[in-house]
Length: 410
Image (cartoon, rainbow, N blue to C red; front, side):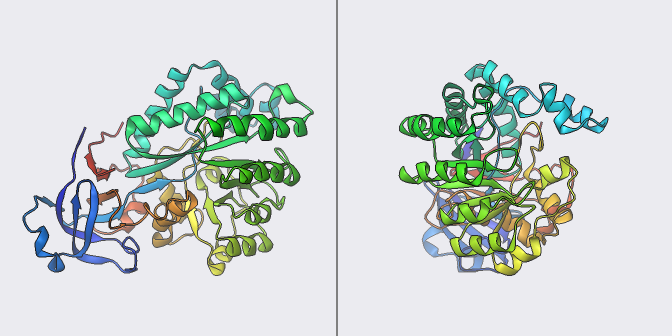
């Protein structure tokens, strides 16, 4: 259910970093929404007289943030892999599970077998949970189809989700997620299929906003990744990369040469990779959910990224195999407790830095006056509570795309 957010929102405390040009928190604040757009934001005592006759929405002392962004998800897929989770706990290795038909290929098979409507209904339930945490923009990757018709099906579902839920949604083509069985032993041929057929067709159909590659020793090499990046760049598409999760393949430095929006995972990121990211303005997207679920011990180089001034985003990485997380607030806590981020760094990671990782920094991630209103009123006494509570229902009041949206946690 949605109602208009137009009017004056009073009695608010704007969190630090949420208003462009004002890094500090602003207490006793107000903002003005008209025709679904944010027209003014600042100290309540400075509210222009021109707005005095607008209806008033009482903020009741809530903490105010920009709408959150989940900048890395694999939200559309068939089936689940809870059985594999149980098998790993019982001692089975990833290789053993994969050899028995599990792993990513089990999700590929389930996704290929599912209808478009089935995939939509399953993904819609997941998206509802994310949105209830104050999320106002989401990225969804393909990559569980690994063939033109099935990648198309996934991306069509993603577009439909954005339209039906009236949420800012970015689609990323991740055809280079794994090698499909039809191309076993012929990785270069599959890369050619991506570059010459899949990517051009899906882009022409308006289904792609960015292109991603899993560059890793178990996936695609740096040389293969560059072929895909070159094909994407020739069409004016921005690139992203899954890199340095299991080993240092130099993928991040390669992505930086193509001015990638983001490089994601980064547990084995080198000093050279960090320097390349800084020079290119590439965002480091940290994914503590996968780190937690896989019980990893190699931490991303947080201190070095911080020292270099590389913006760090946080995301759920929701996927059925390694990060079945459907709460960005849980990810906030993990970013602090597992990766050692400060509360302010974590909040920047799901707002302005996440927006930058999607190329949305001009319209999302902060309280941008003049843009469509996306913000969240949190009934808490301090911004630290957003990262502090685990499993608590904060019941935020969410304004998304200029409307107040009622969510019910499920």
